[in-house]
Image (cartoon, rainbow over all chains, first blue to last red; front, top):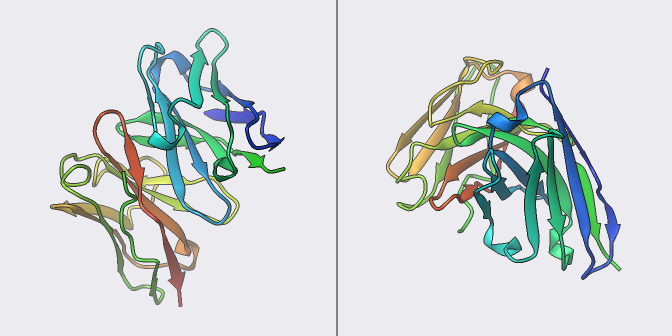
Length: 117
Length: 110
C-alpha cells in the first residue's frame, strides 16, 4: 500500500524557517517525480514544487521561488521542503504527493504550517 | 500563472448528470492534454478522479468522465449520488514545469 506521511509542520513567526519531511513507503520512491501541494485554510489547492526522480530538475510556483527548496533522499525514501522567509500567506496544509502522468494519484494526510506572530 | 476558472458551485438531484467547467488559456489547458480532476471532502486529502483529460485511474468511479475543447476542460458526473457531494478541482500543466489549479467547485446533491 502506498503511504506518504508528512511531518514538520507547526507555528512559526513571519520571517522564520521550517523544514517539512515526507516519508514514503509501498512503492519504488526513486522511480517517481514527487511534489508538494498546499491548501490555505478555506481556500483551494496550489501546486508548490516538483522534483525529478534523481533530483536533477526542480520547479517552483513563482510565489515561493528563492524562499523554498525541494529536495529528496532516495536512500531514505524521503521528500523534503525547506521553507525560509516565511510569510503569513504561506499558512496552509502542505501535502506530499506522488506525481505521474501530469497528475497526483497518491497524497499524504497533510501537515499544517501556520505563520503568525 | 492565474488560477483556472471554475464555477463556484454546481448542484443536481440524485440520478442526474452535472458538468463542471474549467477554463484556462492557450498557455495551459489549450496547449496540453494534461488536465486532471480531484475530489476533496472537508478535512481530507484530495483524490484523483481523472488524468490526462479523460483517463480514469483505478479506484475512480466510472460515473466520472472528462473532456476538453479548446481552452476549456470539463468533468461530468453521471448518475449523481449523495456521496458525490464534495469540492472538485481541475489542474493543468502550464509549461516549464509549472502547474496551475482551478479555484474549485462545490458540488451539492439536492
